[in-house]
Length: 246
Image 1 (cartoon, rainbow, N blue to C red):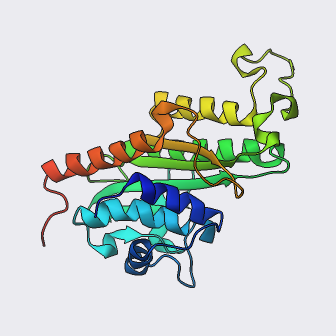
Image 2 (image 1 turned 135 degrees about the vertical axis):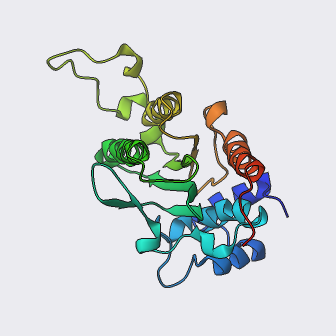
């Protein structure tokens, strides 16, 4: 069965522990190794979301051994500014990095504590791998990168009053950041990730344990666009003969 909107909403609900895994997602997790003692790189909260992303590739004919979610060397990809870095979901076939996904979340009550860390992580992962591509460390087709982010929907992330102000410092910052909540700031950040081509697709949502249904603040960063980009990647490689029969 194809991935549906309901699958996505159920996976987000499972992130908050609000819903048990569907039988289909449980089957996928068993097939690719998620939910085992090693869990997935993004932590058990992300198990169902990782399984949902894996489903795209399983149904496109990629062998389960091409889809890696366990902790360990199978998730490590070469970098340029560091030897290797672990991603949260890696799909590779022969010499081609089909897709690599980074999955992160940010929760309260103090959103300021880890906000900058999440920004720096996302930038560092993409820049490092993109530069590694230029150094010919990925011999197959050009790698494809996806970024999935959940921010807890709470007063502290919604209210601009809870955001640290934009200090002038030695040089003034962009006015576009002023008066934005953490939710709004991260939306702009994700839009710029896409505009600069650092990631091929970004899904940014807000959600909460009390109301797990995902909020998509920016149309270009919603699940529909994200899943369409994944399907487009699969179709593109399929036209080039991937996955290839042994």
